[in-house]
Length: 124
Image (cartoon, rainbow, N blue to C red; front, side, top):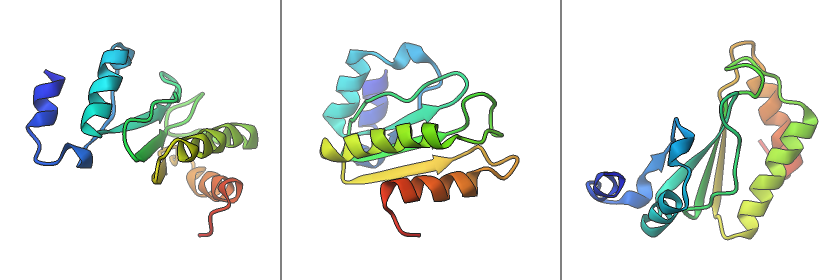
């Protein structure tokens, strides 16, 4: 089913897939996404943790918050862990890394984004 869905797109390399259940996190699914170069959306949330899946030359991190959905202030230590994973991905051939914060209900996202940019040595 996943294969036929991916194949239904003209250019699967332009797809990003975010799974909402850990049952999808298998070697078979990882291999399928890698085969077609589909971008895996790596999610950090109260229900899921980031992993080391690289399936494309693009990485996509979606950060909802760890202790509470959409209203979580990441600590510097947590952002260091995330930036370390991003650096690891870059060392494994990832050309573009997108990090999106969806923890903004209380306005934490801008400060968290600024800090991770500093940790990654990226200018605004």
